[in-house]
Image (cartoon, rainbow, N blue to C red; front, top):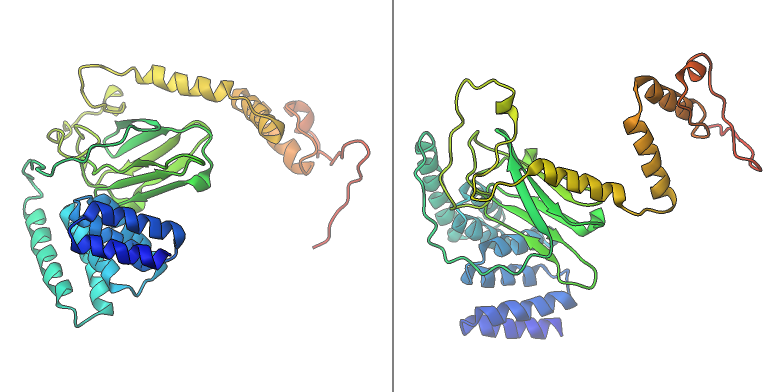
Length: 342
């Protein structure tokens, strides 16, 4: 059935019905999610629809499933070039060329990447402001709210998604792309895939999934102030030199007509975490964390020492008592302590 849908998708592609082709390939992928060819072919349809971010994601998936599939490298390289990520495109194309040395398309595209990269390096001192003429795709209504702020060296994006398991979150970083996909059981997946205002260093980017939010830290490739999170929404601003006051170290927020109260926003998030209803071990761990966070240095030392020395059976906050002796293990009533020999 999956192969039949893929065959119909190819017919639609030949007839220039690229949207229909994407739908048919998607159905084929639902039936056979481990077929690399389906992802590579859907990437080609996405390229025709100018949905280059989705094309890159599909090509990457195809490469993961079948690293020897040369057309997947070609799709990824083509889509990245459309997104002006020429270094990423060149890397993908060179890998594809190594697997298919006789394919002339790779050499032609690699040569074009080299030209574009040289132009970027030439204009690096004073890059021109480019106007993105690509027609934007109408975005779907977001399932989760997101905000961002920035420091001189990084941009912090927060997605307010509460109670999402870590395994349901998939985040990828490109040269100028952030891809956030959150799988929500019983609902359509949430996608945040903007082309970023400036370039980032993917290997230095990181993220953390928390109980009430997902915090993403993007390492800037250049020390400039982003006018927005997304590309093409204002010129970059170079930081002012020789500014060393305490005020200058505060995060620089994008200007807008409505000024956001970030302290209030942070307080709301902390209140949500505090009011969160937990049960069992999660509630107990939260209780212990609150005690530890509100404790002074002696109480923290007492808690750490008593817990470690007693093998997790004693937790004391009295440093005068704990600091003067070794804390023995005290098992709960009705239980026996055993020492294991390794």
